[in-house]
Every structure is written in structure tokens, then in C-alpha cells.
Length: 206
Ligand code: TYD
Image (cartoon, rainbow, N blue to C red; front, side):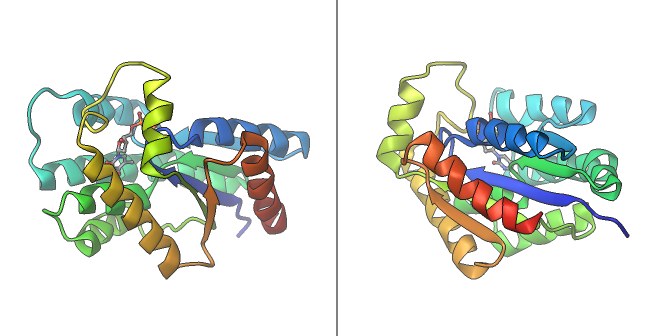
């Protein structure tokens, strides 16, 4: 079966995933590749509605319900957009995937990270990225970036910085456990240096 390339971007809020995805997309298009750039939550029409609930619902959502909402978004996204694109041979550049659920939902200390992962693996039929770029940003730089770009704060961004520190640690653990899938880049480096590091790794996979 012809198969494209599935690249996911992960990192804390404010780590520069969007900028890097745009730069990588432009570079891939210059090389003549078909690119689908997408995100979770919210990469489909159903996902937009789920995104509104998980990010902007007023009041608490039970942790298991929240995890299932992300997984529901993911199931629909993979089935209707990601798998068809990969089957066409496209490169899929995706902002957040299963690692986000493991890092964020697991970091709340209520849910078992392995259980969170299993739910998403079931939801996606076990689709794993070819490459996951982790844009690692220390807490101080992450805060500074968010504060300098004020916008509508979502529920998660409003949570304590301690939570973000746990998310970061969870991501680094995931990367250490699967070094062949992950590229960890220090996101406090200049944008073009980060982009070059990502291009090197993606170029090797094409
Ligand atoms: P988004 O506005 O896309 O943030 P960012 O630009 O930082 O990617 O919001 C996504 C938020 O949803 C982010 O705070 C992380 C959270 N999230 C989870 O908690 N679990 C998940 O499975 C996913 C995909 C996202």
C-alpha cells in the first residue's frame, strides 16, 4: 500500500507549533509534496464542536469524560481525514495527537496515562506517527511567550503553571521511551534554527 508520512507536533502552549508547521508545510510544498495540515482537537466539522466543549465549556468536565471527548475528536479525525490522506500518499502535518492526551490528561494525576493512551489507540485503530516533533520549552519561556501575545484564554491555559511543568515532564518521558519516533527540539532557540532541525529529520524520512 502506498503510504504518506504522518508527522505530529507536540509541546506546551506557546511552544511555537503553529509557526513550525507553517514553515515545514511551505518547505514540503516547494519539494512538490502534497501536504495536509491539521490539528486536534478541531480538525473536522465534528471536531470543531468537540473543541468548543473541551476548551470553552464553563464549569468542570469529569476527567474521564474529557479524555473521551478528545478521543472522540481523534477517532473521527483519523477515520475521515488523516487515514484517507495517508492512503493518497500525502504528508500529514498535525498539531497534537495521542501524546497530548497522555501528557495533558495524565498530568492531572487523576487518570492513568497508560489507560488514556489505550483509549486513544482504540479510537484510532492504532495509527502511530512516523515522526513526532516535541517542541520543548522551559516554563519561564513558555509563560513569557503567552503573556506577550494576549488572546482568548482557554480553560487549560488558565490552569496553574505547576500543571504545565508536569505536562512538560510527561512529554520528555514519552520522548525518552521512544527515541526513534521523537525529535526533541529546544523551542527557545531561534525560529529558523528550530525549523532547520525539523527539516533535517523530515527530509531523511521522505
Ligand atoms: P490549542 O488552542 O490548540 O492550543 P495550542 O495552540 O497550545 O496547541 O488548544 C489545545 C489544548 O487542548 C491544549 O491546551 C492542550 C489540550 N489538549 C489536551 O488536553 N488533550 C488532547 O488530547 C489534545 C489534543 C489537546
